[in-house]
Length: 197
Image (cartoon, rainbow, N blue to C red):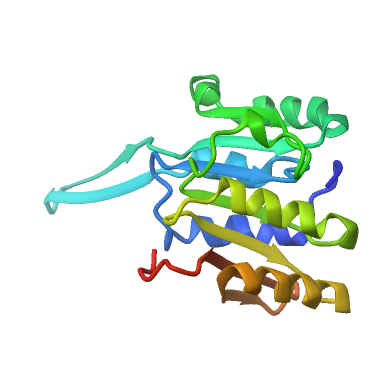
């Protein structure tokens, strides 16, 4: 993913900020994090409750219950990723975000299987030679309840090939499309999962 901020990360971050998905105090892992934007946003999300006890007084209460996030990438990207995460999160939230090395298909023993409520990935399906390892990683990290959210552009046949491979192992639906950036967001879950999030 490197040090650039791709449009898919921006679109998925905006989608998370719309509030349709409740990440409060959930366990989240970001794959191929690059800049760590998705993990940072997931950690910062807040529940906003508004109440008006009288016409003269309106209060907005902010409860900081963002997600507990593991932000991952390959070893060469970790130094930049860690600096970026710490620079963009208030110090009191640092314990809620962990930066860890993850090379798909290789470092899985360093992560508890099926322990994440959400798996996030943006711009991570561009190298066809990594597709098998990415799918292996997704299967390892998923429980029956895990929701995978992947954002990407569909530009090449290889992108469609990955979606076909993903649909062979998970139930996959497109949940959002940003026309201005030509970015799709797909939700995937194990085939046996019946409920929506």
